[in-house]
Image (cartoon, rainbow, N blue to C red; front, side, top):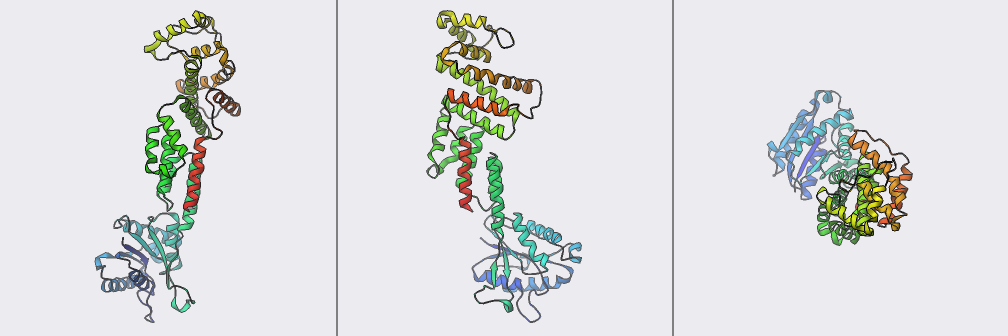
Length: 422
């Protein structure tokens, strides 16, 4: 690890007229005394401080063994700033460009050392502004050098006054909002660019992203060695999903739909709702009623044979006479459809309480068909509260559901960890 110094050059650098050391020299002596290895120095100057920059470069090259003259860059600022060195916006633009140049030489563990005690007030402030904005790398310090004539007892001549804590608080607020919006990938990017980055939080954010994407194997692998540091439920839940346990999968799709709806992804919500209703019907027909049927075209003949033999043919005759809400008959020559499954469920008395809920969802599934096949946009859901109530009642009767969305539990744990990291 090495230090790269960036500083404006002031009228008091490298030495004042009284031969008192300027802030750059004082900072360099402090860094060397505290075992810092100086790797490179960038000196920014106006037209009026050009000679001061040259003198500072010569002093550094002669006094610091790790620095050659080539490693000490003298950088003239733009003419506009040289003529108006009190403009804070121009000062910030200059230091940003200097940081870009320094990054070329910065290794992963190198620290950018910003001297905020030379130059005009705008120049001194610019380094803290850049740090607060997060433009500099994670490894940086803003240094202050006190005037020895104004020091009080117990005060250090050289100290750093980082504003990273303010940036951390801002980053924390942004990350928390991204997490509450289930934007795990965005939260991860923000986290990795902050000073808050912890491997456990990264693991949980990746876990949330892949789980929400229904990639359960990837979600499980994200936990890795962190399994001893997290709540056991995350491993238990993802294990059930990886093993494709039907109840767990149906619950997962349901909670996934709630996330889409909260984020106003209405078209995606309707597609997922259609799939959920269809899979609930298959679950009821297969596991509640006990008919081994499939909607796959390759299994059409076998599925209809099962239906024809059920209830001594009574089920098949019921389907032949069945009428849809609009008066149409079922097409019994095609593969098993969603409406055929609904009719089968309706036939069996043990499912009588579920049928009205399934029928209530049909209008939303039809809206999905309009969106997918008719290129019809969806910017809202009518009677959203009623829909959510119907969906929740259906899931409670079919699979049972926990009181809290697992993604909301995950969000709370991540936010708790973020608070502790600050």
